Length: 119
Image (cartoon, rainbow, N blue to C red):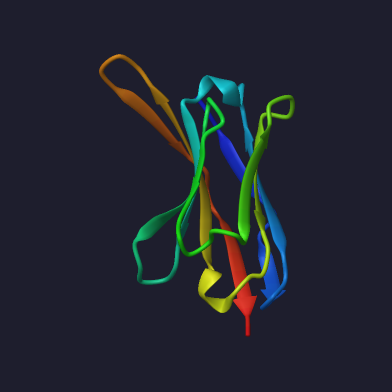
């Protein structure tokens, strides 16, 4: 059973920074892709940042230039550095991992960590 454990959320003022961590219970290089999603109250869960096994990175337009996804393979941890935070970044942030097989995929989710940005 794969576990993803997020940490690093909290309350921060607008313009501030936070770094989220997602610690995996197995080698993160085994995953095809690892992502960060977020879900604000009453809204759908949206993709924020993606990091593939090959190192390809992509961001939602709303966070480009402010957020950075990275990983430490030795610590089996993926990070989301969030700078210049805005009140609209307030959400529960979820770590996600996917492993592709020939004809299927396994998805894993963390429990989420709350990020609240005050104006």
